[in-house]
Length: 160
Image (cartoon, rainbow, N blue to C red; front, side, top):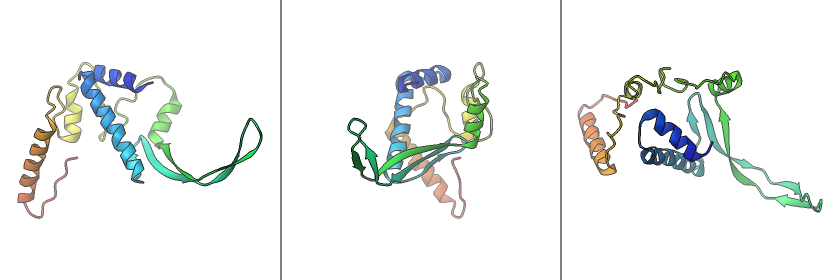
């Protein structure tokens, strides 16, 4: 599957415009890459772990000449699938994972029903199509929310 095909599939399932889904997919990939460049480990529960690791220097062989060639050590990106993802792929039942990766196990994509309800319930945010705001509006809303939560000293709140 290509990135374009992924964008088209997600856009059709969620009812969002392809250009908006494309921005989200690209931003997600950019953040994964940035985390790996910074040497961070990125874990997505039940899905897997992305990590940057060092591969030791070694001797390789030129397949045309058979000559030994030194290969310098380098950083590589690795992905280790999570247990739930492995089990689902091994089952090979052909169905879609549905709520496999949702925080509460509820399906995040429910065709025919209110598609936004599971995300709203899991994350407590509005993901309704057309509710996207500009980055400036999002920053202003975040600042406003931050000021509201900082007013009650000693209380900790979580977005998730």
